[in-house]
Image (cartoon, one colour):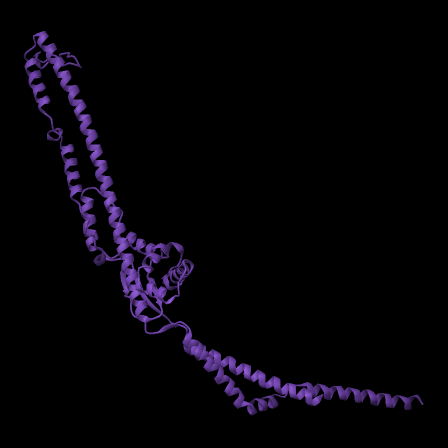
Length: 372
């Protein structure tokens, strides 16, 4: 009897097991069916994709365009520094060491190019900035500040092409760039900024050399005047000693030089009378007649000559280029941003994904309602 009762129970378990198996089978995804659903809705998917592509194209058309003009520079060579080298050679002849060389003027150009103060000074003087302000309706000082900050920090750039470490950051080629809404503006702005900074560097170098010359000349003149004063004091003391010695010689009746026939004569170290009053009178007259110390001092005469040469040095026309072009500024032929084709493809791709997801979700919702 127990065996009879157990059979129905076993059959019920087996039946439940197979029901679960078929349920799991029904829950599995049928890829062929999904592809079929997508294919049937192809026109909807294509339409939505095209719609997104059109929207992307429209957005890209209204976004501001960006064009970047570029240039590449390196340290100045002989041709760029020829005139400055000639000036430095002339200065070295009068002992003026300026410390100016190709590396120093190149570093000045880089530092000035990166200066936010100079970037702003150049920008506000351009027609480009004035036109941007004219397009704004009653710009406030804050609006002007924001416009300047945007251009200064984002549109003007300098980058070392192959820097290995901070010490060699500007040892190789340097890339300069300026970004603007049109290729003509980008080229004009970069060319103008390079000229602006080059002029600043030339003015700085000229001012530094002028300062070196002025300090050198001032020091030489003061030292010369002090030496003249010392010589004048020594002359006055010498004249007074000669007068005293002459009085003593006259009092002693010594008119001619004392002769000892080879024996050593002990003379007064302060008031020498051994040469006699006649010689002392002649020496006194000559010493009093010397009013210009340079006539008897080659050192003073040479120093006076150097000062006159320093006074003749003029740097009114100091011309040099603080860098060497590896690539001159050019008018760009390709836009930087926005990338219209990229935006178009991206928008179309998003539209395609969303349309496929919408079709599949709609199909799943209908399937659920049918099974319910």
